[in-house]
Length: 108
Image 1 (tube, rainbow, N blue to C red):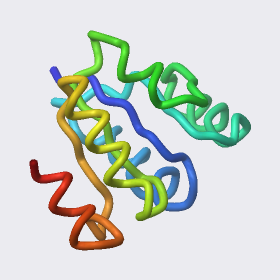
Image 2 (spheres, rainbow, N blue to C red):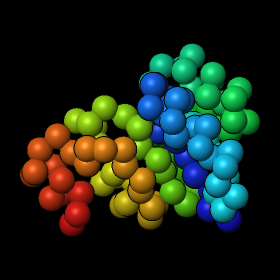
Image 3 (cartoon, helix red, strand yellow):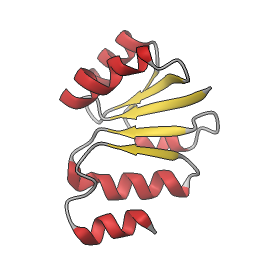
Image 4 (cartoon, one colour):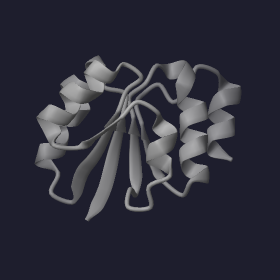
């Protein structure tokens, strides 16, 4: 079973991605993260996941296999690259990046 972390608990994270995990038997949502602690806490209440306000703490966890990025587009490249460098699989909300240069950097 894949153990996942949701990074970004705003509209798309809470309204689309978080509830979808209840229907995917192969993935367990174990951590949620948002810079607004109240949003992360609300997501944790709904999912039973651990709460974080700094995504880098999630990347330190060896038991998390993938991250689901539901953050503003201009943050996708930095978080995706950091996550892949930490050995995590990445699911990135669309669009992939805010510039072609950022998208190319994510593919490297």
